Length: 149
Image (cartoon, rainbow, N blue to C red):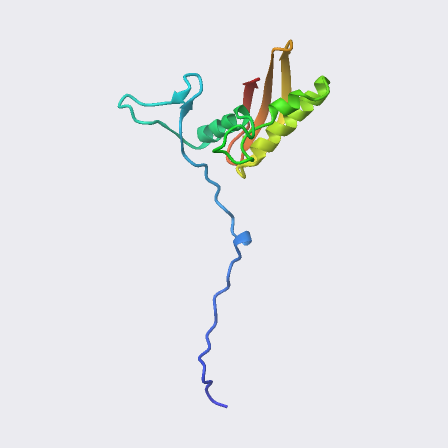
């Protein structure tokens, strides 16, 4: 047997996607000024972009400031369920636990979120609640974020 009718050749080794380290990157976003309630603009009236860490923190703020299911444009993965958490059997520990769960779930939707932890609650009577916690994106040190409900 001499030569084959079909040519043969060696293929290079194929690297599976799960073997390749994936470069994480945070997307740019328009900088939203929550104190003013509008997008930030520069002197030429152009939108200012939030880069990397700032964009990630702004995404976190948008997540925990939005009640899940109240915005038709958002999927059911966007936002928190604070109203439902506040209805927990008038037990402060249960309410705090439910708030911790809903904020953690909302932020862990983003694959760039490494963890959410160290929740602290400051009650102002029955009128408001300030929640502080630590969130860590994969590329940065921890950030402490605070929200008042």
